[in-house]
Length: 246
Image (cartoon, rainbow, N blue to C red; front, top):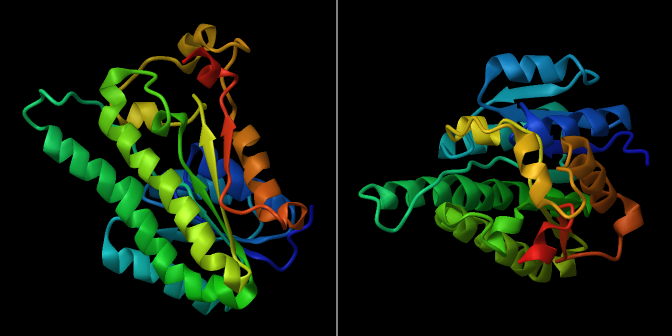
């Protein structure tokens, strides 16, 4: 799959799924824009890409979101693919004193920021008849853990947003799809204060393993390619069978 001369913008690109996605698209000839908050990790990913545009930014800050799109257009003049990967995990119960703060943080990052970046990018994606891939989670459909309630609500919102965007943008030739991974090796748990090794989750998966970020990147690339030219508004689950157990 060649993405030569295509411009691919990846948020949350400094580690995990985002990093694997940026590297894969770069290998296929794309002009990759890598967005993230951690300058050191961004630099590490950039070394594995071919002359990427690296933007240190926080998608939850409105000025940063606008700067991401402005710098991308200044550098390349267009956007062909937007990968909305930036997201966080937080744990909590409705009985927690600070649950509203947790809920607001999740919705701000996982939903509002995604919506805002998409809003800013869509006029450019319509021009190229490009496409959007949103990264959700199986937690938007089932509760692997009750403490993921608020996180699950944010990801269910992403699922529904993807369908709505797919319907609204189809008449412009723009496709919008969703990927819902199960447990996937990344920094997202560590960033949430959970130091449990990923391997500890493998026995709970029917296939006895967890996903590598590269597997999700492969699906992102497929959905962004012409091989998926008739696919829009669809949610692809990659979870080693976890949803079969619920």
